Image (cartoon, rainbow, N blue to C red; front, side):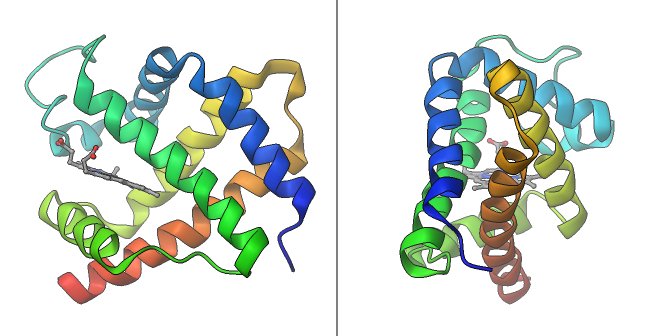
Length: 154
Ligand code: HEM
């Protein structure tokens, strides 16, 4: 089914809200990831050596921001072009960085769940199933591109 203007707007508008509090939302995102999959802690350089999630870490914020922002860009591409296109260099980098850090396909489901829950909490009463589906679809297509590249790299 085609990705509609409304779906794109649902993603874009909630990203605008999320962005205003990106540090707090990044922390929430990683807290949820570790709640679902405690073992994921060992993969992240900024998590593995401490008992608690660092409260103000540039790398943590960077990863969370990249996941949200690239999903948002994917929503735009889905509506404009009907598919998610990641530039070759970016995709190669994403493929290798994740293979190198021991990421597997299943982790993408964990991150998806954390992404959706973070958005749901951040937008409060503005949340809708439709908003969740729009984010979910854009994320799935982006994740599929990264996972395919990871298979090439492995
Ligand atoms: C690193 C993006 C999903 C684990 C990175 C980096 C990017 C990125 C751009 C390079 C470092 C940075 O700029 O922050 C993404 C995107 C994802 C995604 C767009 C999904 C759409 C995942 C998943 C996992 C994961 C599912 C595993 C739970 C990691 C790890 C690193 C990394 C362990 C190295 C970070 C470090 O220790 O500094 N990712 N990622 N990523 N990613 Fe992801």
